[in-house]
Length: 412
Image 1 (tube, rainbow, N blue to C red):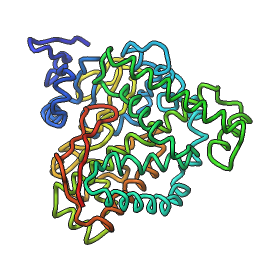
Image 2 (cartoon, one colour):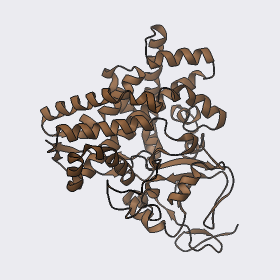
Image 3 (cartoon, helix red, strand yellow):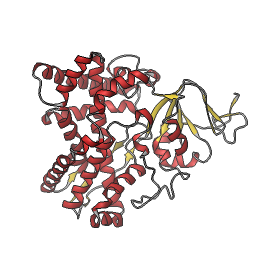
Image 4 (tube, helix red, strand yellow):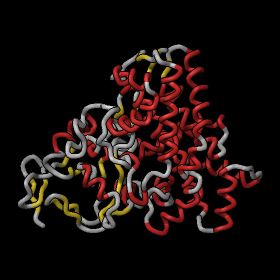
């Protein structure tokens, strides 16, 4: 299909209604919601200056999550970002999140039972108690950064308990996880790679250290069972064993940290809705769901096109990187009434929340994340009804991958 490039650098298929723009990281980072709002009615995707096609519309994002013509990226993304080898590369080469077919099933299956909804629901009372204890500790300190002292600790403590990691290691593995997760953003440059690579080395070395300790002295915990089953089955290589746990640590700490803080910030910015949740704690799940829609902590999911894919007259070429923009899809005017309004009472959310992805790669930790967010918010509703901002209103930054959040300073 013939394409043309106009004087603005926009590329489009011949005869298409609108040319597809190539947008810079600076443009996307400055105002992602505004950029997507501008282009979503005109074109089904935009072209990213670093490479790849960012799909904008809710219907397209939902369908492509499950489309057999689309698959996980394997090592395409690090290769595009000039990461052809090393520990960062290994996270993509040996992880379940970027694998396809039988390899994906083999890497994911040891975790499926542990993170099953029914089993995870049994953790709710423990997570509730932990959240309430953290709130009481925070209240004794006076003004605090709720990200560092609360919303970051709930998922970190939970994943530590599930995997059997010492709680004293939380500052170590969370710091490394936050540094490594920068690789999932389009905002890092070549000058940042040595530091991110060093964090990947340190995080994988930490996991190896923990695994060696479990092999030497097994316990009645997930890691010991995981190792025993993996060794008995012989289906995972040593690198795969390490990388699955690295991905669990990153996924189990970073995304929920930002989402937990943002839901509180959004409610405090809408006092009437904060009051509604305080009056009716039954609204907590709806408040969590709306916060995840309005400002998701994950901006996009990466995929690759196995063949040419036509969307509204425009073609995504085969072998191209696709970024399914959750951030754009959940503000799509065709999918939601008043999409730019934060409304915990809305009734047009889909049954399956788009923030957790779709198809065979739908987030393994969805049930756990929901519980952490609900109990984190619920503890504040019960114990800190006069919660208020004590600093600037935080923002989630980023247009793709795992987004970054500012400090959330509050007083009681």
